[in-house]
Length: 267
Image (tube, rainbow, N blue to C red; front, side, top):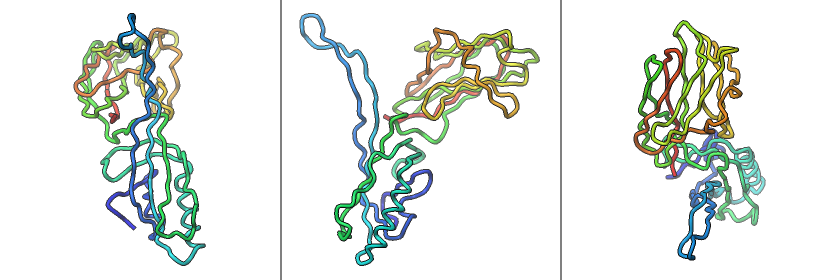
């Protein structure tokens, strides 16, 4: 039964599994951060050496409105367990166009199968990307040039990670590409002349895999191939963007068209 709050996993809503399911609430725990510190000289205060954003936890509470048929209650619980067990993209109705990539940390426990008014609990955790992510891209296009700037405006409080697609239709092969955040100047340098880094008619794609790890690929037609090995040793593993205006600098040895984008994140 649909209530004021609905929960979906991989686009399948929990209440749609069976009419007897009633969602009683969603609890979002505070993000789990590990802050490492060091003592300042004189013993007054501390330095913050690092902030590790570890995971984010969401608890879903629901009841099964079936009083008499215990086998039916058990059947519904098994359907819910199957729905939750493998995790995926979690969505809640009050966070429009946002998703959280989760694993299932706790399946419903059965303390009293006859307690038809009792709540059951599912716990999800987001480890790989401990942020709610926008499902809509923030993006900007940069016309063909060898030295250009594009501005990404990000409304999400957690900023994002820069993704980019550079397309080479110059008539010549590109042997070098540089892309960076103009403010922090964390960036990536790519170089190769043999083989040519990006042949004419191909593209270079900067993005992140399902574990949120950087990947850099060449796209020719519909075929991708990794060119991560041509990244310079001093390149960054991610180009971090902040909430607000972000100026992105792109340089290449031939004129290329660029699409700069990110899926913003919420703290």
